[in-house]
Image 1 (cartoon, one colour):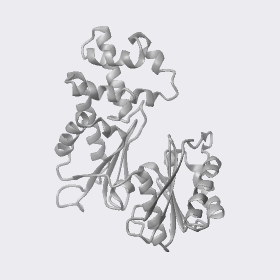
Image 2 (cartoon, rainbow, N blue to C red):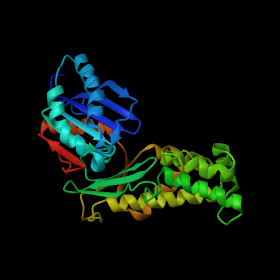
Image 3 (cartoon, one colour):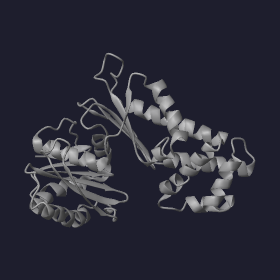
Image 4 (cartoon, rainbow, N blue to C red):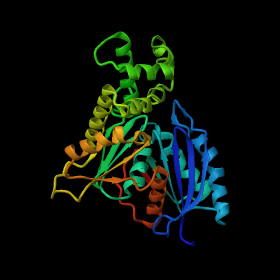
Length: 331
């Protein structure tokens, strides 16, 4: 493999993943080696810490380059959670820092929603829903981006893992109180997970990782739904409606049959592991709300999306819309 080498980086709440690819290979040519750091990049008052990212990234990238007998890359793409909102320091520092350390001539700094999109749909128009602890959708007609939800567990992320977990815990406490809408099955599951019902506020409210704590109960809601719990089934049916609505909001407005280029919707994220209790009603909601749109499987993950962006930069074939905060490009 002798084409331009590119670097793909995925930075998220669980750490950093880095890989190398030959941009001349049609599928991106990703090498089998993916280096992983389990230290999430720090954030502070100035946003995502560029120095901490570089401290981890540069040794990993140099190790990968040494394996293929190279010292520099032609292009790189860094996808990071929070890039669009608290990534100002990354955009200010990384272009020069990566050029100096790794010889990067072309750089894409992308929101993790953009790398999720690129990994799932490549450079085709449509929308991608990232459903995990939170929930966000990103869509494009290859001219502009449309973003829907992703407002966090207090103001939105409707249908995401934290939303489902919170709804399940509310139903548990309704059962404990004897109020309508409660579920004995969810109450038993909540007490098995968190202890006596009276201690639930103490287990949830003070936690700095409250969204993850709430989302940890979503699989319990899924299991109760599998066992036929009507309240749990209702929670997942409503979650499915919210997810489909978010997908619809992210799609370009000209999606009617005959008007658009044949838009696709892909679903990604750990929430999909809930399986049929969620996916069944979600398929039905998507078919009802978006009959003119094709639902497809995601081709790859956000790291694959970062590789695709870097390869497109290296070969001059980037079609996804550039954006000051969602997809900032230096050439």
